[in-house]
Length: 298
Image (cartoon, rainbow, N blue to C red; front, top):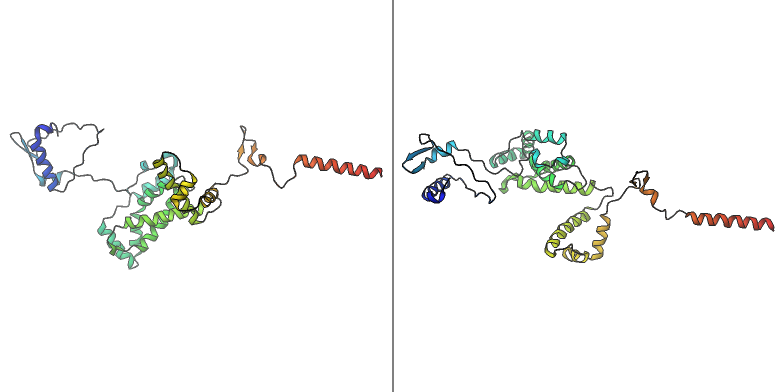
C-alpha cells in the first residue's frame, strides 16, 4: 500500500478487515525490496470507489484472495537437500513421496482409529503421508557415516513403529509423536552401522552429548573447552572422557595409499613391534657366523 503515512485510516480499516477474517499480516524483513503498487479497478468486484476511500468487501476478499501459509516442516523438496549428496535415486524418491497428500489432524485421527482395528490400508496411507517428515529429519544426520538413502530407510522403519504405537486419544499431532521414533531409529542405526568397530550405544550417546556441550562451551568461553571443563559439564571424570574420545577415533586402513604417486601404503611405513629389526637380524647373523667359525677352530 503506497503512502501509508497519508492513508492511516485506510490502513487501519484494511488491517481490521484482515483481523476479522483471521488473516495474519507479517512484517517484511528489513532487507526486503519494496513491492510495486497495485492499481485497483474501481469497477471491479473487489473494490468500490467512494471519493478518496477504498472500501473492501470481506466476503469478496475471502473468496477471491488465496492466502499462502507457511510451508510445513515436513514438506521437503529436492532443493532442500544439498546437491553433494543427492543422486538420481533420491530425486526419484522425493518426486514419488510428494504425490502423497498431507493429512489434516482429523484425517490423522480417523486413520489412527482404523489402524487400531487392523486396517492395513490405513496404516500404509498414514506412513506414506509422513515420508517427507522422515527425509527432513534424515538430512540433518548426513555426514555421520551413513548415506542419505540409508538414513531415510532407517527413519522409515522408525516411522512404521510410530504408526503402530500412536495413541490419537492424547490429542497431539502424529508428526510430533513420530519425530521422536524417527530420530531414535536413525541415531541407533548410526551407532550400530556407521563405524567399522561398533561402539556401545551408551558410549555413542555420551559422545553425542559431548559434542553438543562442547559447542555450547565454545560459544560461552570463546575458545574450545578443555577435557576437564567438558568432563565437569558432563558429570564424568576426565579419564573417562579421554577413554571415550580415544574409542571414538576412526580406524585407518593399512592399505591407505601414501605419497605423491600413491605407490606405497600406510602399512609399509608402520613398524611391526613383534618383528625383528634389520639391525638385530644382521647382528644375530654375524654372531652366528662367528660362533660357527670359533667352533671350527676348536
